Image (cartoon, rainbow, N blue to C red; front, side):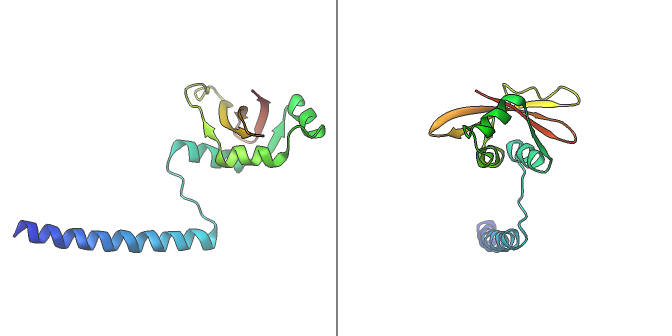
Length: 124
């Protein structure tokens, strides 16, 4: 008897998960909503929502076309934050190290996340 009920439960759960996945995916595609539950995604989404400023060294790299603003956007969208190296406890601005690829090399971008702006400090 228990096995039969468990089977019905699993079938219903499977149908519900498939329906919910289809429904949420369609809704996210239409409205542009993204669901960020993991810390990496939440921090990057927070950074993308603020105005971006560049340190002097990064501004020079942008002017000399050594770095492109699309690369910065890529880091803030697809990058991986190294939380063990980052200073997440400082107030008011937290410093994060975002790892990603730039011109087929692994690069780490240092970013200072303040309450009202994001400053790109440097590349390593």
